[in-house]
Image (cartoon, rainbow, N blue to C red; front, side, top):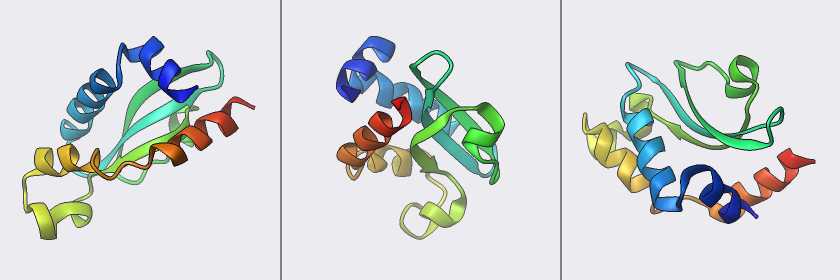
Length: 107
């Protein structure tokens, strides 16, 4: 179900990764890149939030997958190279969990 929704909204998982990575790397300062579920439209949607702003309270989107780009999340391993950190996050993404969050959000 999640795979079909990703394909319908973004064209492919690779396209989602490319779009979310670009949005997340572009966050100025600290913040988050998100894949969320829009309960109003029933669609997946990408968003960014500055600082510690919560996704659901600020956008109405239900969080499915977040990429933390506060320096504390990556500095020890990646120094100031945020794009490398964001690229590597896809290697450890737990898609089973994201799928379960998606199914729960649709109810």
